[in-house]
Amino acid sequence: MDFFHQLVQQLINGVSLGSIYALIALGYTMIYGIIKLINFAHGDIYMVGAYLGFFAVTQMHVSIFPALLISMAVTACLGMIVERLAYKPLRHAPRISILITAIGVSFFLEYTTMYFVTPTPRTFPSVIENVSFNIAGFIINGQQLLILSITMILMAILTYIVQKTKLGKAMRAASFDTETAQLMGIDSDRIISLTFCIGSALAAAAGVLVGVYYNTIDPLMGIMPGLKAFVAAVLGGIGILPGAVVGGIILGVIEALVSGFLSSTFRDAAAFAILILVLLIKPSGLFGKNTNEKV
Image (cartoon, rainbow, N blue to C red; front, side):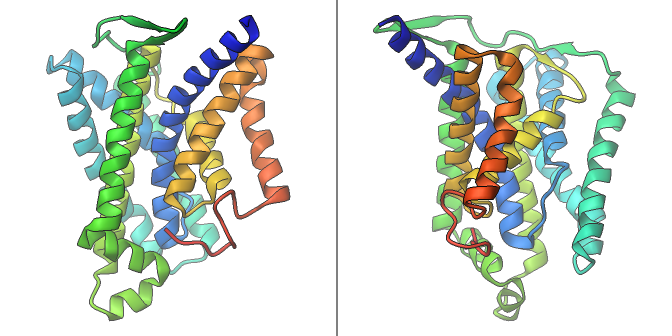
C-alpha cells in the first residue's frame, strides 16, 4: 500500500511537471510544423517570460493572473521580433544557417538578461496561499492545482484557435504547404510571425508557473527545460500538437518516477535516454506516421 501511495503521489507530481514541459513543447512543435525550424532559443523565451512575471509581481505589485498576462503579452512581442530580425532573413537559407542562428539567439537572450539582472538567482515571491489538499491520502498543493488549471485553459484556447478560427485554418494550411497557401491568398509571413507569438506566449506562461512552483529563477533556467521540451515534442511527434502535450506529460511522469524511486541525479539522464530510444525505435514519435507529419 505504501508503494502504491508513493506511486500515485509521484504520478501527480509528474503530471504537474509534465504540464510545464507540454506548454514549452507546443511552441517547438508549432514553429517546426510550419517552417521546419527547431527554435533552440525557445527555452530562453521561457526564461524571459519568468523574469517578466517576476518583475510584474515585485515592481508593479500585481497578482499572479495579471502578471501572467503581462508576461505572455510582452513575450509574444519578443517572439515576433526574434522571428522578424533573426529568422525571416534566413527563410530560404540552408538549414544549418538557421540552426546556428537559433543557437546564437539563445546565447544573446541569456547574456543580455544576465547583463540587466545579473546572474544571481532571484526568489520568486509567494503569490498564492500555500495550501495543500489531502484527497484520499494523496497530497495536491495549491501550486500544482494552479499549474494544471492554467495549463488546461491555455491548451483549450490553443485548440480552439487552431481548429475553429481562420487563423488556425491558415496555420494548418501553411504547415501543409507554405508556398501553396501563399498562392491561395494566405499571408505566410504573417502566419509565421503569429505562430512565433503564440508559441512564445505559451513558453512565458510556463516560465511564470515554474517561478511560482519552485520559487526561484535565473538567467540560465531555460537551458534544460528547453531541451527537455524538445525531447517531449520529439517523443509525441514533432509538428503534431496533441503529441507535444502527451510527450510533455509522459516526460514529466517519467522524471518524477525516476526521482521518487531511484535518484534525482538520474532525472535528466532519463529524459535524454528517452530521446535516444524514440529516435532508434520510432523516429516519427508516438503520433507520427512519417517524418513529414504536419500540425
